Image (spheres, rainbow, N blue to C red):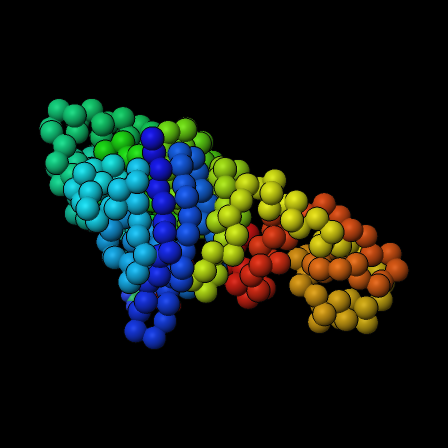
Length: 295
Ligand SMILES: Nc1ncnc2c1ncn2[C@@H]1O[C@H](COP(=O)(O)OP(=O)(O)OP(=O)(O)O)[C@@H](O)[C@H]1O
C-alpha cells in the first residue's frame, strides 16, 4: 500500500488561510499541483513533508498520522523545496554524499546510490565540479537527485522544472514517469506542458482551496462547449470579445484576426465555433489572465 490522505487540512497564517479545508487522496502516480502565485501550493507541500504542521486537519500515510509516524515517515519522503540551494562550496558528488549521511544512509549504499543518481540526472561528467559553478538548471538537477537519495515512496517537488532548459525538462519528465510507477509524486508548477505530459491527475488550487482534481480526460471533458474561435476583420468585435471574455489566444493574420476565447455559454456571434478544449484553456478558465505565467 502507498496512500497519502490529506484530511480537512487548514493552515492559518496570521490573517490568512494559506490552505483551507483541503481533502485529497493520493496513491502511486504523478500528480500535478497547478495554481497561480500565492495559491497555497508550497504551504501544502511543506505540510506533507512535515516541515510545518496543519493548523487543523490531518495528513495520513497508509492510514497513520504522519506526525505519529515521525522518523518512519521521513524515511520514505523525498523533498525538493522551492528555494533549494545546494551548499555552493561542495562538489556535486560530495554534496550528495553529505545529504545521504544526513539521511542516515550507510557509506557503501550512499556511494552506489549517488553514482546512480548522478547518471540519472545527467551530471556524472561534472560530479567533481563545484556546485557554485553550475548553471541554474544543473543546480536544480542536483536538488532533484538529493530528493531521490532514499528511494522515496512519497516525492514532493516544488517547482522542479524552474530553470531547466527544454532538453533537461524532457529528461526530467521521462524520469518522473518511471518513478511514478510506485511512488506518490506531487509536483507543483506553473508550466502546463509539464503537467500535460507527465501527470496522471491534476489538482488545481487557488486561494488556498482545491478547485478540482481529475485526470486530463475528465478535466478536458468538463471544458467541452466552453472554448470558441472566431475569425474576423472587425477590430470592434475583437475589442468587445477581449472585454467580455477570457481570450486564450489572439492571432493577427494578413486579412483576419483569429481569436480563441472562453465562454460558458454559446456566444451570439456569427462565425463563432465551438472547438476542442486544450489544457491551457482550462488554466485560463479557472485562473485569471494575470495569474498565467509561462504556459
Ligand atoms: N510563513 C508564512 N507566513 C505568513 N504567510 C505565509 C507564509 N508562507 C506563506 N504565506 C502566505 O500564504 C499564501 C500561500 O503561499 P504559498 O507559498 O503556499 O503559495 P504558492 O502557491 O506556493 O505560491 P508560489 O507559486 O508563489 O510559490 C501566500 O499568501 C503567502 O504569502
